[in-house]
Length: 395
Ligand SMILES: [Zn+2]
Image 1 (cartoon, rainbow, N blue to C red):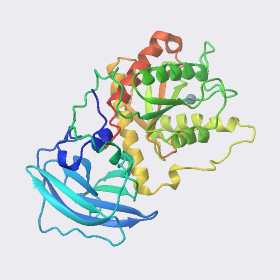
Image 2: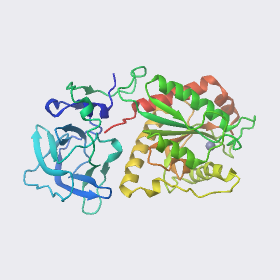
Image 3: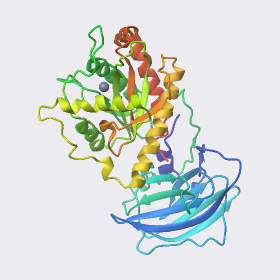
Image 4: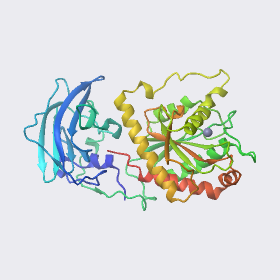
């Protein structure tokens, strides 16, 4: 049974700190602690920064007013004195070397809520800094920590990609599925008259029921043939506090031979010319609105700090890469070129990690036929479901 990392953190108390989380990235060369510091961020947030020589593999757990970060394969350094800023929730930090693991124990002056993945960032070295594990949090009510404190059962998470498909998740992760276009905006149209909006709605509904059966809580941005602005779609993901946003599309290419899926994440700079053109045509959905093209009243992601943007981008990339793998394994016709591409898609501008999947080419006669078939749609849905199951939702 798969247990989310977040759930694990909630159920393991300090006294039962036996956490068998599979490290995301394992290094053979030991990591070395370089520096520990805290700071106060806008919004009364406490920031904890742990600087290390290599990309860290970490677990986070909670004790009694303690936050414990366990770094795998890491050597502490007793003469490193944490630089503690005043006004934060951290009043003391100690290092505990436990075999090859280094535990950083931060004593807190108050309660906090369980830390979500989006509050954690791993930053690459830059200038004077090495790798940094950055954790932001603020005073809370102990939600997600105290709720399960009676259960001391240490659970191990051996995360595997398969065999979990019918197990209900302990914590329901929220996924918003966006069927592109709709209503007066048909999206692209195949030679046989197939409209993108119809195909993606059909796939979105199938995906919803498949993910529901897998224990996720899912929402569709549209469940019928209606028109929604791109910003409205992104806002649904925000309002539902989604953990993941998946936007479904199908594309057209002047070259009728072009076929296969491709997966995109948000980037202000397109990875290639084709990706740029595609983003422009998908973004043009808003031009259909009678009021003409409107700038987004609320470009949420742009309002984020650079660090938060970095974190969302990192998670999106992680999901998209897994999704590309999953689709490849499903042996669905693939478009040549890089598996994950980047372009400034308006619909992806939010604080929710996510990707836009172009399911195939309606401009390709054979693929137009395929995309209409239930069998092919189910194949796509199965592959996307696997990609969600293998995505690591928590820290
Ligand atoms: Zn589209």
